[in-house]
Image (cartoon, rainbow, N blue to C red):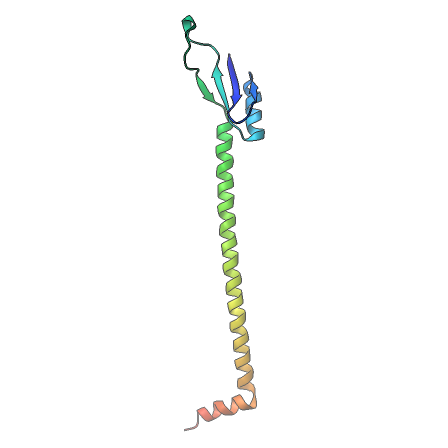
Length: 117
C-alpha cells in the first residue's frame, strides 16, 4: 500500500486523490511512499513517487513568471510612451510659441528684414 505525505506540512493520506487535491489547494508537493518493505523484514529504501502536484506547481510557476514578465514589459513600455508624450507636448508648445512670434508684428518685421539684401 502507498502512503502519501506532504513535503511541506503534516498532511498524510492513503489515497492518491486526496494527496492530489491537497497539492492543488496548497501548492505543496505530496510524496508517495511504498509501505511494503523488502522480503525478510530487513529495512530498505522506500520507493518514492512524486504526485501530480509537482506538475501543477511547475505549470503555475511558469504561468506566473510569464505574466510577471509581460506586466513588467508593459510597464516599461507605458513609461516610455509617457516620456515621449511629454517630449512631443513640450516640442509642440515650443513650435506654437515660435509660430505666434513669427505672426506678431515684431517677428514678422525681423523675418522680412533677414531677407533684405
